[in-house]
Length: 411
Image 1: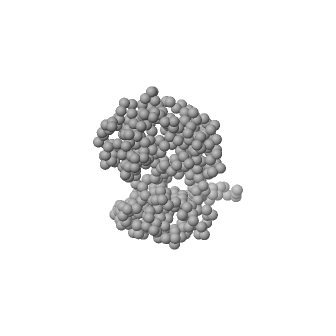
Image 2 (image 1 turned 120 degrees about the vertical axis):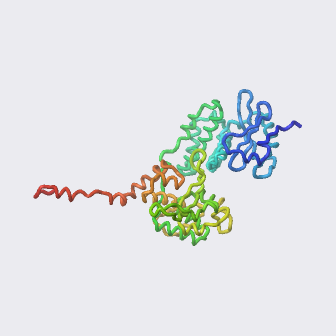
Image 3 (image 1 turned 135 degrees about the vertical axis):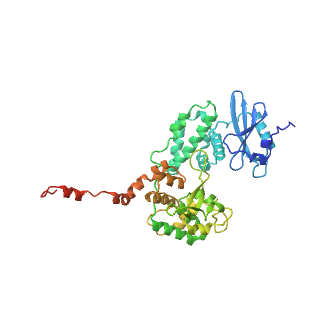
């Protein structure tokens, strides 16, 4: 039996889990022209084989590392099993799917995991790929077939969702081209074939009145105390449901005190350390950001351990589609808007702070978004609602004009 290559860094799971999370795999040379790589992610890492031979340089995902679960020799592999799989991959040569669209999505998913990104859009893109397109090599794609695929999605989903799905595939194809060291030269195919549908990104944000928000929160508490806490925190912070699901008990800082700028004395200012979302590009440098909450809510939430918000049955909301749950319970609740989703609470929170004069950069930070996104999605609404704010600042000049006119003349 061939002797295994030893590596204290990759061989033992405890050592692997100490490695910094990063996009590029950690490699160990197994044999000439072949390396075993370990890609460290926020969850269980993945094993990859890299083969450099006959002028080509390619990689293939082998399976998940046994960082969290016991190995089964198939989907979850030990370091030794990953070596065997890598050698087998090298012997078989470059797989037919090595440069396929399907493989590109797999590599992009691994890349997102390594950066703590959201892989849900990858699952959607993979679900709607045709078999023919999935098996096609990236280097032979044409803009016509990609545009045909993109347009076929219009019958299944909203234009904005089509754009998100196409953007995911475009990102995967760009990554494949970047990794191909110049072998893939048809980027124009997906740059134009997967171009976003114009006008699909226009925000249709529902903004609630203060009474609407109180009504929604009250209705949620009538559903259950647990759902009431979830909805109240969503309304108060404007956080995404994905952020609320990740909150831990220690994220509530009920007794946090800061210097009051008026009295120069310490004042209790409860807050929640809100986890960063997985939106946007690159790794988030700030993992948690302080967001103010009321004293009454802080009192009810403080002192908990583990996951902060749980369902009435004691389970977490992690695998619950909260948006659907919200839409079911909101039916029959009388509001000023005909259709309200839980994200209306986020939109309302952003607009409420903007109209109160909170600087846009601060609003963006509190809601884990960018100034650019706020200006793009809320400027039109703010302009419609800013009249009451601007009107008191108008300068009335007519009295002075009349007073300065010569006597006997009028307009």
